[in-house]
Image (cartoon, rainbow, N blue to C red):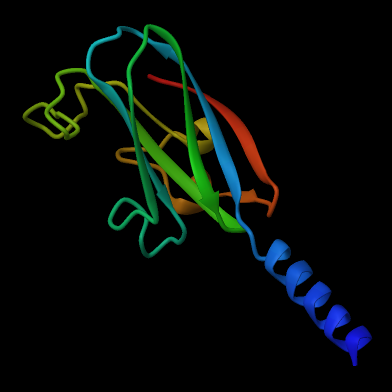
Length: 138
């Protein structure tokens, strides 16, 4: 009976360890100033892309390179968008025709044509152990 309990406890422990999520480390290059903050939104599907983020992060800006760590991301396909909120108003500023006036980037350094890229262009796999990526603001 003790052997069965021990085996059951070991199985539960291994299953819970396998269910743990990894971290996403994002290195952001080409940050122009230390004003404001870097805002990151992580999306888990084409339906939610640029509408409903699965996770968000906000870190102080620093001229040069900024590192962002998003913890406990489950294994799967994700894409992110980010921008440098230099004036600290909590939103992406745009000009009269809707073009962003603050620096921004998407995962995979994806670019859109006449608008943001699609989820297909920005998506990448995050394994259970987590991953790291580097992007450049533009």
